[in-house]
Image (cartoon, rainbow, N blue to C red; front, side):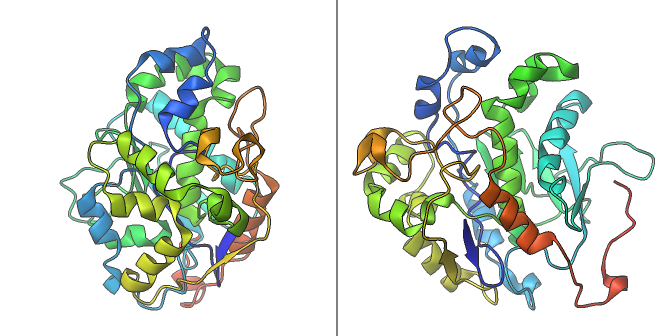
Length: 328
Protein backbone atom coordinates (compact mmCIF):
# COMPACT_ATOMS: atom_id res chain seq x y z
CA UNK A 1 0.00 0.00 0.00
CA UNK A 2 1.39 3.40 -0.91
CA UNK A 3 1.27 6.25 1.53
CA UNK A 4 2.48 9.78 1.73
CA UNK A 5 3.61 11.18 5.01
CA UNK A 6 1.38 11.75 6.86
CA UNK A 7 -1.29 10.50 4.47
CA UNK A 8 -1.61 8.46 1.32
CA UNK A 9 -1.39 10.28 -1.96
CA UNK A 10 -4.23 9.46 -4.25
CA UNK A 11 -4.47 8.84 -7.92
CA UNK A 12 -8.04 9.34 -8.90
CA UNK A 13 -8.05 8.20 -12.48
CA UNK A 14 -8.30 4.49 -12.94
CA UNK A 15 -11.37 2.45 -12.31
CA UNK A 16 -11.13 -0.55 -10.12
CA UNK A 17 -8.18 -2.66 -10.84
CA UNK A 18 -8.56 -2.36 -14.59
CA UNK A 19 -6.40 -0.15 -16.76
CA UNK A 20 -8.31 -0.85 -19.94
CA UNK A 21 -11.70 -2.39 -20.54
CA UNK A 22 -10.04 -4.72 -23.04
CA UNK A 23 -8.41 -6.73 -20.27
CA UNK A 24 -11.68 -6.86 -18.37
CA UNK A 25 -13.81 -7.83 -21.35
CA UNK A 26 -11.47 -10.65 -22.33
CA UNK A 27 -11.95 -12.17 -18.89
CA UNK A 28 -15.77 -12.01 -18.80
CA UNK A 29 -18.07 -15.03 -19.01
CA UNK A 30 -20.11 -15.46 -22.14
CA UNK A 31 -23.46 -15.85 -20.42
CA UNK A 32 -25.27 -14.58 -17.35
CA UNK A 33 -25.64 -11.06 -15.94
CA UNK A 34 -21.95 -10.14 -16.20
CA UNK A 35 -21.85 -10.89 -19.91
CA UNK A 36 -24.32 -8.09 -20.60
CA UNK A 37 -21.53 -5.59 -19.99
CA UNK A 38 -19.50 -7.12 -22.81
CA UNK A 39 -22.18 -6.24 -25.30
CA UNK A 40 -21.91 -2.49 -24.65
CA UNK A 41 -19.21 -0.22 -25.95
CA UNK A 42 -16.25 -0.27 -23.53
CA UNK A 43 -15.75 2.94 -21.60
CA UNK A 44 -12.49 4.83 -21.48
CA UNK A 45 -11.30 4.67 -17.90
CA UNK A 46 -9.84 7.36 -15.70
CA UNK A 47 -10.05 10.38 -17.93
CA UNK A 48 -10.75 13.29 -15.61
CA UNK A 49 -12.00 16.21 -17.71
CA UNK A 50 -9.13 18.57 -18.41
CA UNK A 51 -10.85 21.57 -16.81
CA UNK A 52 -11.43 19.66 -13.55
CA UNK A 53 -7.89 18.31 -13.55
CA UNK A 54 -6.64 21.90 -13.67
CA UNK A 55 -9.03 23.08 -10.96
CA UNK A 56 -8.13 20.15 -8.74
CA UNK A 57 -4.59 21.46 -8.38
CA UNK A 58 -5.68 24.99 -7.51
CA UNK A 59 -4.61 24.59 -3.90
CA UNK A 60 -5.40 28.05 -2.56
CA UNK A 61 -8.29 26.56 -0.59
CA UNK A 62 -6.14 23.93 1.07
CA UNK A 63 -3.59 25.96 3.01
CA UNK A 64 -2.82 24.03 6.17
CA UNK A 65 -3.87 20.65 4.79
CA UNK A 66 -1.15 18.11 5.61
CA UNK A 67 -2.02 15.70 2.80
CA UNK A 68 -4.81 14.33 0.66
CA UNK A 69 -6.75 12.36 3.28
CA UNK A 70 -9.71 14.10 4.91
CA UNK A 71 -8.26 15.02 8.30
CA UNK A 72 -10.65 17.82 9.26
CA UNK A 73 -13.96 15.98 8.94
CA UNK A 74 -15.58 12.97 10.51
CA UNK A 75 -18.45 12.86 8.04
CA UNK A 76 -18.15 13.10 4.25
CA UNK A 77 -21.44 14.01 2.62
CA UNK A 78 -22.36 12.53 -0.76
CA UNK A 79 -24.84 13.86 -3.34
CA UNK A 80 -26.03 12.70 -6.77
CA UNK A 81 -26.88 14.40 -10.05
CA UNK A 82 -29.02 12.20 -12.27
CA UNK A 83 -29.69 8.53 -11.75
CA UNK A 84 -32.33 7.03 -9.46
CA UNK A 85 -32.76 5.80 -5.91
CA UNK A 86 -32.18 2.13 -6.81
CA UNK A 87 -28.83 3.19 -8.30
CA UNK A 88 -27.99 5.34 -5.29
CA UNK A 89 -28.62 2.38 -2.98
CA UNK A 90 -26.18 0.20 -4.93
CA UNK A 91 -23.45 2.85 -4.76
CA UNK A 92 -24.06 3.47 -1.06
CA UNK A 93 -23.98 -0.25 -0.29
CA UNK A 94 -20.61 -0.67 -1.97
CA UNK A 95 -19.03 2.52 -0.62
CA UNK A 96 -19.87 1.59 2.95
CA UNK A 97 -17.43 -1.32 2.71
CA UNK A 98 -14.81 1.30 3.51
CA UNK A 99 -16.40 2.83 6.58
CA UNK A 100 -17.56 -0.54 7.91
CA UNK A 101 -13.90 -1.31 8.63
CA UNK A 102 -14.09 0.94 11.69
CA UNK A 103 -12.59 4.28 12.60
CA UNK A 104 -14.23 7.66 12.96
CA UNK A 105 -15.01 8.59 9.35
CA UNK A 106 -18.55 8.15 8.03
CA UNK A 107 -20.28 8.67 4.69
CA UNK A 108 -23.62 10.49 4.77
CA UNK A 109 -25.75 9.90 1.67
CA UNK A 110 -29.08 11.21 2.99
CA UNK A 111 -30.37 14.43 4.52
CA UNK A 112 -32.08 14.91 7.87
CA UNK A 113 -35.36 13.46 6.57
CA UNK A 114 -33.72 10.41 5.01
CA UNK A 115 -33.75 11.52 1.36
CA UNK A 116 -30.72 11.04 -0.84
CA UNK A 117 -28.86 14.29 -1.37
CA UNK A 118 -28.78 15.76 -4.85
CA UNK A 119 -26.64 18.42 -6.44
CA UNK A 120 -26.83 20.43 -9.67
CA UNK A 121 -24.33 22.04 -12.04
CA UNK A 122 -26.20 25.28 -11.27
CA UNK A 123 -25.33 25.12 -7.56
CA UNK A 124 -23.68 28.25 -6.13
CA UNK A 125 -22.94 26.72 -2.75
CA UNK A 126 -21.46 23.33 -1.91
CA UNK A 127 -24.16 20.67 -1.45
CA UNK A 128 -21.82 17.79 -0.52
CA UNK A 129 -18.16 16.86 -0.21
CA UNK A 130 -18.45 14.12 -2.85
CA UNK A 131 -20.66 14.99 -5.83
CA UNK A 132 -21.40 12.07 -8.10
CA UNK A 133 -22.49 12.44 -11.72
CA UNK A 134 -23.40 9.97 -14.44
CA UNK A 135 -23.64 12.20 -17.52
CA UNK A 136 -20.01 12.08 -18.61
CA UNK A 137 -18.33 9.10 -20.19
CA UNK A 138 -15.88 7.09 -18.15
CA UNK A 139 -15.27 6.35 -14.50
CA UNK A 140 -13.13 8.68 -12.38
CA UNK A 141 -12.75 10.47 -9.07
CA UNK A 142 -10.88 13.53 -7.95
CA UNK A 143 -8.09 13.03 -5.45
CA UNK A 144 -8.98 13.24 -1.76
CA UNK A 145 -9.27 16.76 -0.37
CA UNK A 146 -8.24 18.18 -3.76
CA UNK A 147 -11.95 17.81 -4.54
CA UNK A 148 -12.45 20.92 -2.42
CA UNK A 149 -10.73 22.99 -5.10
CA UNK A 150 -13.41 22.57 -7.75
CA UNK A 151 -16.61 24.60 -7.90
CA UNK A 152 -19.91 23.70 -6.18
CA UNK A 153 -21.43 22.94 -9.58
CA UNK A 154 -18.64 20.54 -10.56
CA UNK A 155 -18.75 16.76 -10.10
CA UNK A 156 -16.00 15.16 -8.03
CA UNK A 157 -16.76 11.60 -9.15
CA UNK A 158 -18.34 10.12 -12.26
CA UNK A 159 -19.83 6.75 -13.17
CA UNK A 160 -20.66 7.06 -16.85
CA UNK A 161 -23.41 4.69 -17.99
CA UNK A 162 -24.33 3.39 -14.54
CA UNK A 163 -28.02 4.43 -14.77
CA UNK A 164 -28.42 1.98 -17.66
CA UNK A 165 -25.67 -0.54 -17.01
CA UNK A 166 -26.71 -1.30 -13.43
CA UNK A 167 -30.43 -1.73 -13.99
CA UNK A 168 -29.97 -5.50 -13.88
CA UNK A 169 -28.99 -5.10 -10.21
CA UNK A 170 -31.74 -2.68 -9.13
CA UNK A 171 -33.97 -3.56 -6.19
CA UNK A 172 -32.01 -6.64 -5.20
CA UNK A 173 -31.95 -8.35 -8.59
CA UNK A 174 -28.91 -10.56 -9.29
CA UNK A 175 -27.59 -9.72 -5.83
CA UNK A 176 -24.85 -12.36 -5.84
CA UNK A 177 -23.58 -11.18 -9.23
CA UNK A 178 -23.56 -7.57 -8.03
CA UNK A 179 -21.28 -8.46 -5.13
CA UNK A 180 -18.54 -9.69 -7.49
CA UNK A 181 -19.27 -7.41 -10.45
CA UNK A 182 -16.81 -5.17 -12.23
CA UNK A 183 -19.02 -2.15 -11.56
CA UNK A 184 -19.11 -2.70 -7.80
CA UNK A 185 -15.34 -2.78 -7.91
CA UNK A 186 -15.45 0.54 -9.77
CA UNK A 187 -17.32 2.04 -6.82
CA UNK A 188 -14.86 0.64 -4.29
CA UNK A 189 -11.91 1.88 -6.31
CA UNK A 190 -13.19 5.40 -6.91
CA UNK A 191 -14.25 5.87 -3.30
CA UNK A 192 -10.78 4.64 -2.39
CA UNK A 193 -9.36 7.50 -4.45
CA UNK A 194 -11.74 9.95 -2.78
CA UNK A 195 -10.47 8.72 0.60
CA UNK A 196 -6.79 8.98 -0.25
CA UNK A 197 -5.54 5.72 -1.77
CA UNK A 198 -2.87 5.75 -4.44
CA UNK A 199 -2.51 3.15 -7.13
CA UNK A 200 -0.88 -0.05 -6.00
CA UNK A 201 1.30 -0.30 -9.08
CA UNK A 202 3.38 2.57 -7.69
CA UNK A 203 5.24 0.03 -5.54
CA UNK A 204 8.93 -0.16 -6.57
CA UNK A 205 8.86 -3.78 -7.74
CA UNK A 206 5.77 -3.17 -9.82
CA UNK A 207 7.25 -0.02 -11.36
CA UNK A 208 10.35 -2.00 -12.30
CA UNK A 209 8.34 -4.73 -14.00
CA UNK A 210 5.68 -2.59 -15.65
CA UNK A 211 6.29 -1.56 -19.27
CA UNK A 212 5.20 1.99 -18.52
CA UNK A 213 5.35 3.39 -22.05
CA UNK A 214 3.38 0.43 -23.40
CA UNK A 215 0.81 0.78 -20.63
CA UNK A 216 0.48 4.49 -21.37
CA UNK A 217 -0.01 3.81 -25.07
CA UNK A 218 -2.61 1.15 -24.28
CA UNK A 219 -4.63 3.49 -22.11
CA UNK A 220 -4.42 6.33 -24.61
CA UNK A 221 -5.71 3.97 -27.30
CA UNK A 222 -8.83 3.38 -25.18
CA UNK A 223 -9.64 7.09 -24.99
CA UNK A 224 -10.09 9.78 -27.59
CA UNK A 225 -9.25 12.59 -25.17
CA UNK A 226 -6.65 11.25 -22.74
CA UNK A 227 -3.37 13.13 -23.04
CA UNK A 228 0.07 11.58 -22.75
CA UNK A 229 0.72 13.61 -19.60
CA UNK A 230 -2.43 12.34 -17.88
CA UNK A 231 -1.66 8.75 -18.85
CA UNK A 232 1.85 9.14 -17.45
CA UNK A 233 0.35 10.53 -14.26
CA UNK A 234 -1.70 7.33 -14.08
CA UNK A 235 1.18 4.89 -14.51
CA UNK A 236 4.54 6.45 -13.62
CA UNK A 237 5.15 6.97 -9.90
CA UNK A 238 8.00 9.44 -10.45
CA UNK A 239 5.91 11.51 -12.84
CA UNK A 240 2.98 11.44 -10.42
CA UNK A 241 5.09 12.78 -7.55
CA UNK A 242 6.65 15.40 -9.83
CA UNK A 243 3.22 16.73 -10.80
CA UNK A 244 2.07 16.86 -7.18
CA UNK A 245 5.21 18.70 -6.10
CA UNK A 246 4.74 21.27 -8.85
CA UNK A 247 0.99 21.75 -8.58
CA UNK A 248 -0.37 20.65 -5.21
CA UNK A 249 0.97 23.61 -3.26
CA UNK A 250 1.22 22.99 0.49
CA UNK A 251 0.10 19.38 0.33
CA UNK A 252 2.58 16.68 1.30
CA UNK A 253 3.88 15.16 -1.93
CA UNK A 254 6.36 12.56 -0.73
CA UNK A 255 5.33 9.07 -1.79
CA UNK A 256 6.30 6.25 0.55
CA UNK A 257 5.75 2.73 -0.70
CA UNK A 258 5.75 -0.71 0.84
CA UNK A 259 8.38 -3.14 -0.49
CA UNK A 260 5.85 -5.66 -1.79
CA UNK A 261 2.92 -5.10 -4.13
CA UNK A 262 -0.50 -5.87 -2.67
CA UNK A 263 -1.81 -8.04 -5.50
CA UNK A 264 -5.27 -8.24 -3.94
CA UNK A 265 -5.72 -4.49 -3.54
CA UNK A 266 -8.73 -2.77 -5.04
CA UNK A 267 -6.27 -0.18 -6.29
CA UNK A 268 -4.20 -2.50 -8.49
CA UNK A 269 -4.95 -2.58 -12.22
CA UNK A 270 -5.79 -5.75 -14.07
CA UNK A 271 -3.42 -5.49 -17.02
CA UNK A 272 -2.62 -7.79 -19.90
CA UNK A 273 0.39 -10.01 -19.28
CA UNK A 274 2.34 -8.49 -22.17
CA UNK A 275 2.44 -5.16 -20.31
CA UNK A 276 4.76 -6.74 -17.73
CA UNK A 277 8.40 -7.57 -18.38
CA UNK A 278 7.96 -10.89 -16.58
CA UNK A 279 4.57 -11.64 -18.15
CA UNK A 280 2.10 -13.75 -16.22
CA UNK A 281 4.58 -14.18 -13.36
CA UNK A 282 4.69 -10.46 -12.61
CA UNK A 283 4.46 -9.23 -9.03
CA UNK A 284 2.23 -6.55 -10.52
CA UNK A 285 -0.38 -9.02 -11.76
CA UNK A 286 -3.65 -8.72 -9.86
CA UNK A 287 -5.00 -11.73 -7.99
CA UNK A 288 -8.75 -11.99 -8.29
CA UNK A 289 -11.27 -13.81 -6.16
CA UNK A 290 -14.76 -15.30 -6.33
CA UNK A 291 -14.09 -16.47 -9.87
CA UNK A 292 -13.23 -12.99 -11.18
CA UNK A 293 -9.87 -11.76 -12.54
CA UNK A 294 -10.12 -8.68 -10.30
CA UNK A 295 -10.30 -8.38 -6.50
CA UNK A 296 -13.92 -8.07 -5.39
CA UNK A 297 -13.30 -7.18 -1.73
CA UNK A 298 -11.01 -4.82 0.14
CA UNK A 299 -7.59 -6.30 0.81
CA UNK A 300 -5.86 -6.28 4.18
CA UNK A 301 -3.64 -3.53 2.80
CA UNK A 302 -6.62 -1.43 1.73
CA UNK A 303 -8.08 -1.78 5.22
CA UNK A 304 -4.79 -0.94 6.89
CA UNK A 305 -4.51 2.31 4.90
CA UNK A 306 -8.02 3.29 5.82
CA UNK A 307 -7.49 2.71 9.54
CA UNK A 308 -4.07 4.38 9.52
CA UNK A 309 -5.76 7.56 8.36
CA UNK A 310 -9.25 7.39 9.80
CA UNK A 311 -9.10 5.35 13.01
CA UNK A 312 -8.87 8.64 14.90
CA UNK A 313 -9.59 12.04 13.32
CA UNK A 314 -8.36 15.05 15.25
CA UNK A 315 -9.58 18.46 14.17
CA UNK A 316 -7.17 21.43 14.23
CA UNK A 317 -10.26 23.52 15.08
CA UNK A 318 -11.33 21.43 18.08
CA UNK A 319 -14.56 19.51 18.42
CA UNK A 320 -16.53 22.43 17.05
CA UNK A 321 -14.64 22.05 13.80
CA UNK A 322 -15.75 18.47 13.28
CA UNK A 323 -19.00 17.86 11.46
CA UNK A 324 -19.99 15.07 13.83
CA UNK A 325 -23.67 14.56 14.38
CA UNK A 326 -24.76 15.01 10.78
CA UNK A 327 -27.29 12.39 9.86
CA UNK A 328 -25.99 9.23 8.26
